[in-house]
Amino acid sequence: MTEKSAADRAAAWWRRLQPMLSNGERNPTGDRAAMAQLRRCSSVSEAMQIPATIDLFRSLGWHDPANLAKVALTAAVLACVRDAARGRFARTIGPNSPSEPESALVKPLRFRRLMEAQTDDERLTAFRRAIGLAGGKADPVDLAQALLDWSERRRTEWIFEYWNAADRPIASQAATSN
Image (cartoon, rainbow, N blue to C red; front, side, top):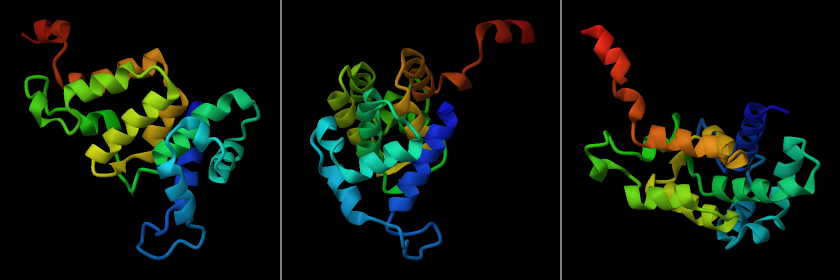
């Protein structure tokens, strides 16, 4: 299974548990209790024991128990997302430009803590705080992609997006356009 399809399946799992559908109607498969249980988990090992986490694990089609911790982390973080938003989460929480760090929803020091989080429990705390600062809004697919593959490459991409580096001209391009 590709990373993208795993993230899409995780987002579908999140949508399935939401109490309301996107059109405002009651979701017949919504499970407020499961979402609340996951939001109350104080650790990833606690989240591993929630039936909704096992449901996500099965939805992903994974079989290796070694993946359960990252699935539990994903479930516990996605449970904190109240509203789906479009766009890269790192860009959403970042400053308008590197010269305006005060404009960020997640200030640079807190973002650094997120990037430097070593354990699953540290990441759980840091991601939950970031989602809270974003008003509970995030793209569940983007978050799931990051949480299911929190690699050095992914952290580098997040730093790039957080600081809005893509909007700055690359030196070689600026030199050739003159």
